[in-house]
Length: 125
Image 1 (cartoon, one colour):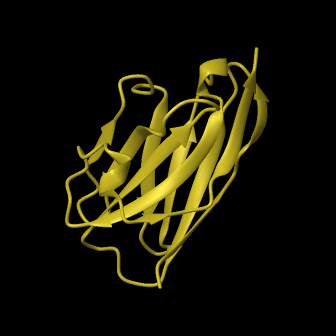
Image 2 (tube, one colour):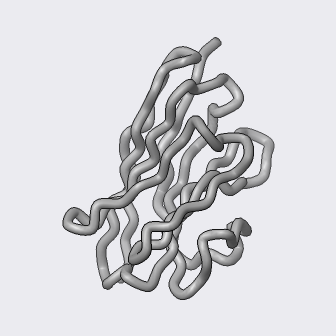
């Protein structure tokens, strides 16, 4: 059974950094794309970034490009989202997601099969 567990959220001031982690278990993810999504109150869930587990190629939403970096540690079966220069509009619940045999440019949440429980990120101005 696939399990994704996020951690690392918190309350920070604008301009600060946070690193989110997503520990993945339950199967081999070598053919998977791993994504980060976020959902702010009253808004739809939106794509943030994705990485291909085996090749390591990445894709970002325009709103976070240059500020956020997605990476993975194969030995730890963990995906990270390093978030720098945080803005109040980055405030949301951040979710880790996984899907087999899709490219990293797939940004629709409905295309992902597995989801974590989410971690809250709050950025104060």
